[in-house]
Image 1 (cartoon, rainbow, N blue to C red):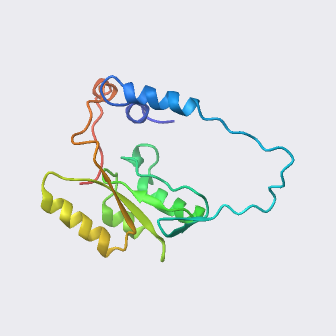
Image 2 (image 1 turned 90 degrees about the horizontal axis):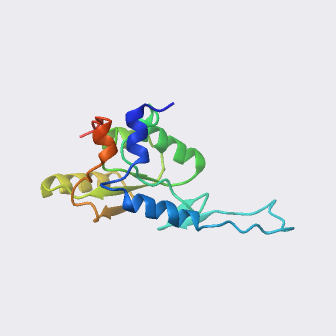
Length: 165
C-alpha cells in the first residue's frame, strides 16, 4: 500500500489538473479491436527504437521519484527493463543519483535519458557529458516545464521531494 503522500503525488497534476483530466479522457477514447480467429502463437513484436533493439514496441519512460512507489525505485526499473528486453529512459528528477542508476545496468544494456535543463548551464553540460561518456543512446529534452508545477494535492499532503541531487 502506498503512503498517502506518494499516492497524492502520483495521482495528481499541476494547478487545477486540467491537463490531467484531458489526458484521462483521451485515453478513454482508445479502444483495442480484437482480431478473431487469427493465429498469434508465433508473433514477433521485436523492433528498434532509435536504432536500439527492443523486445516490444515500447520503452519504460522517465518518471520522477520512482522510489515513492517501490524501495528499488529507478534502480529496480533499470533491472526490470533489461529483464523485459526493453529500453529505459532515465529521469532527471530521480530517487537515485545518475551514477547509481548507471551502475545498475547490465553489460551492453542500452539506455535513454530525459533532461530538464538546469538554469545553471554548467550543471546541464556536466550532466549531458556524463550521459554521453556512459554511452546513453538518446537524450530527450523536456521543454514544457520551465518550472515545477504548483501541485495542490502535494501541498495539502505536505509532500517533500525525496530525490537525488
